[in-house]
Image (cartoon, rainbow, N blue to C red; front, side, top):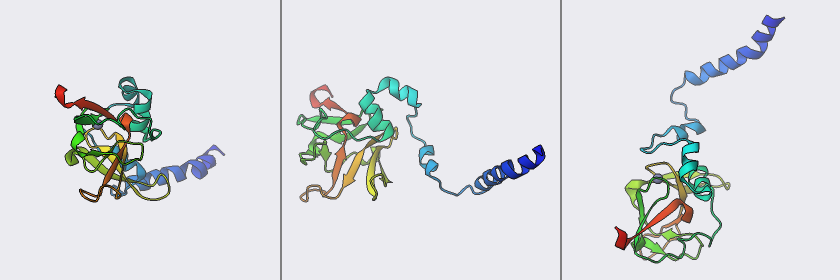
Length: 168
Ligand SMILES: [Zn+2]
């Protein structure tokens, strides 16, 4: 009886595992998480160095409430770096007031940004991530300033840290 149980219940699992292994090119949802970044930390390590809100935004792709982030209204000259790994992402020269309630830029440091797609709210949006640590930053939309790039990088304040120009 035990053998019959084994054959009927467990074998199909072995069979399906085998199938996955035999197809190395198969892309699964998890393949995204396997992308290698220069800065890699465990969830526990991120939680130690980030504020609870920054952790939820950067590592769990949460969105802060609009008009709550300290950098939304910041008009000082300087550089916006990733709150997780401190790599430069945006310049104050490209920040503008979009009225959205989130820090908005018409362009970023392209070499340090990763453009991804998410379907979280039912349709495709361009997700912006830090290319150095994989942290979620926000989204990019096509309703930015027409006079420049036409792009709006809508970024969570909690995903950024600001370095004033006089400190650089
Ligand atoms: Zn980063």
